Length: 409
Image (tube, rainbow, N blue to C red; front, side, top):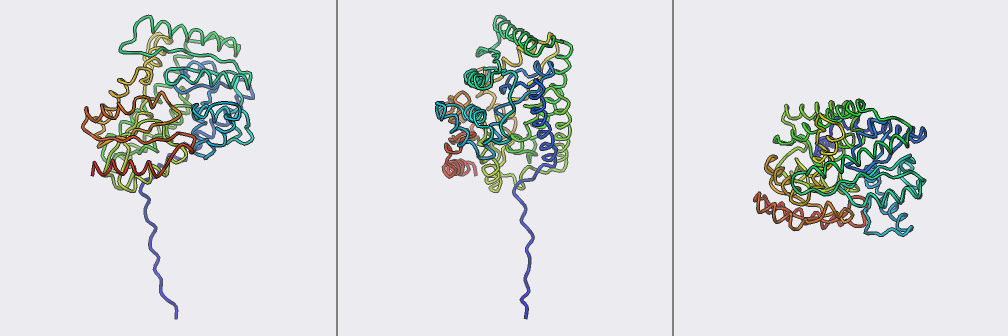
């Protein structure tokens, strides 16, 4: 006699997957292929996050971002291996893991995801968000033979004085000369203005998507934004970025219209500060999603929402890229985070102290105290790294966030 069995329907996941995830994969796969072709054709540049990429794009070069490649290394859980290759060359474990994994991948591309980034013809760095980039790119230059150009943006306190703006603009003029000589191509200001317009269109769509998270429930969670920011970084100034964000914003609007949140049951709304731990990004945020925790805002993805105002091209670009808030000191960062907590009606915040990124993590103990005093919401600091999983204790991080949730619920 057979025993009757019942099959229970599968449980719904705590988070909702974006339909545009497929388009994101396709868009970024095509970009990766384009970097390989550009390298073969002598038209590839590596650029740092925060670099005025509109200028090299106007010179018909393709940009690759080693930091973005670092995120791939982290998500593939290859961070300790590639960082180890750089450490074998004598680079300290205290050095940024983006830099170490990048240098390691150049040393041993055959053991690196995607066989590393293609060899560049130029290395373009800007120190508005990171002071490590020049030494990092000089190391890569020694290994590849590609020349380096640095756009120097001295730190700002308050308004930008005229001499500061003139200095940064002169750096951009030098960049144009460098690009013209390196790629044997004249400067076309009209082309640069067209690229800036494309950049602004994509940035506006991205910004609207971020601001939609003020809704309750939030249509996007932190992991959604961290992954979907890839085109606004790598493809800014191109039609491909616009095409993706038109579809992306369309899906975000539809979620808002239907009252669908990024997670199934939104109970707590938190702010995230810093780069994420790429090697556990899904596990970290989805584990919290099961507890009803969503992150409608973060300090990182909002940094990519600045427009280039119409006007004299180089002066406008100099203004925008000088005023990235990491170049404006700790008070600007605290102001930004307090405003996000207020505007997005958040219940608390998580500061991720990233061992590799000293500049981003500087002052977080003070930041935590000041934000709580000004907003009245509690926060917590967790520690780790964005690429090197050896520097992260998952159980410790979960325990600290659980303690925060006990204060809120």
